[in-house]
Amino acid sequence: MKTMLQNREILLAVLILVMILLVGVITPDFLLPSNLLAVYNDTSILIILALGQMLVILTRCIDLSVAANLALTGMVVAMLNSAYPALPVPLLMGVGALLGLLLGVVNGALVWKLGIPAIVVTLGTMSIYRGLVFLLSDGAWVNAHEMSASFVSIPRSTVLGLPVLAWVSVLVIVIMVHFTRQRRLGREIYAAGNNPTAAFYTGIQVGRLQFVAFSISGLLAGLCGYLWVSRYAVAYVDVAAGFELQVIAACVIGGVSIMGGIGTVQGCVLGALFLGVINNALPVLGVSPFWQMAISGAVIVIAVIANSRAERKVGRIILKKAALHAG
Image (tube, rainbow, N blue to C red; front, side, top):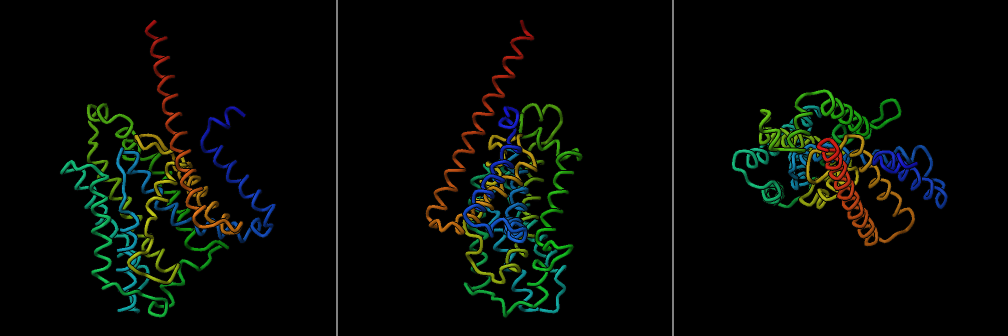
């Protein structure tokens, strides 16, 4: 029991299960496999964005522009589809991902080459990207009837009983697990965030890794741009407004340290699922949207406090061991 309480991933998994069961007692339909699958599907975009954000936070940075990136890339691919409906959807997905990558590269270059704090850079680019959405669309919407059938159908299509949108998130999870555990670049990101000074003296270029993290985050946000507008069949200026806070919250709840160097893919996914269950359960229970915001905010604060206490405890353990060895 003590081990379970000390393991963030196990604790989160148990809490998610308990929440699902409690809601199921009040609303039995919530426990239907089809509904639970819908909850995961609804959370898929949050999972993808959170995994990109995790890499950025691991390097002691933060990306506030992910939702604006999503909105801009989503508007671009929606307008392209509206103007040229014969364009293959995979091509449009590629355009969205590459544009998102470019926007992420801008963030990373400003942080790396100019040494501007990431929160300042991404706060600025967030406003710029939102402004570009308005300039590009002139404030107009791209609605479902202006999109081709293939454009809006792909995320909803099912393969082996699972929507394509959910499969995309599963694929991203698998790739990120491999990247963070098996690839040298992924391990260096942890080292750079855990102790930038030590990483520098071992030959690791911290700025370059921050650039890589921002680029990957932008790439995933660009992919989500297509997934969002095609799933909801609408593109407009305020798409995903404020969603960056949900993305950051998923990381923090999942145990990703805002001080960098600490966090896992599974924890990040569970953090996103935790929010996904809350976001789907509270409306079912008839909870006011204002209370939903308050509850989500309280969960974030509690998660930050828990992370802070865990990191201080680890620090005390390291100091204690060092003292024992010195004695």
